Image (cartoon, rainbow, N blue to C red; front, side, top):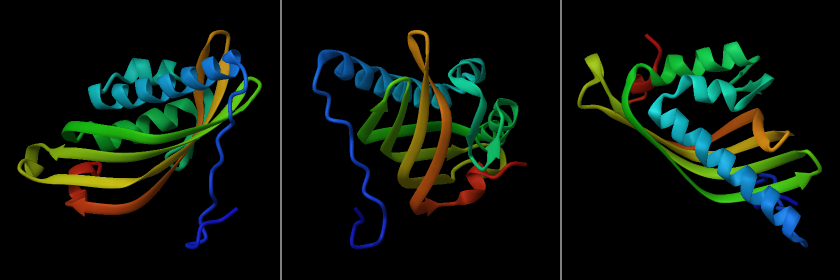
Length: 155
């Protein structure tokens, strides 16, 4: 199914039993926790929350993903990644999610006093390992940008 603009519509799994509902909640919690770790710059936590072969942010592998994320967030002051409209599709020990975001970034150093904000959605892939869900893939779809992108440009 597509929207009038041609974008694919994401359909959530409709949990029919308590176990599916618990899995859905666990994926959403993993997503929110990951976003909080971005804002607190908890690099060890972010590393622990991803699969070794994670693909995201235009690169592949955990070291590359952490490096690219740090390159954009270490140059900022405070950030806030607000999430909403989370949909989850479950398939055994795998899941995908689509979540809307509004990410606000405060400039630091030469960019003090500037801000950058982007709005869009994440398409994420998750894998259950034991009792936790970890990020296996992320595609960022930015719909709008406000402010000065230099705030997040690697230096």
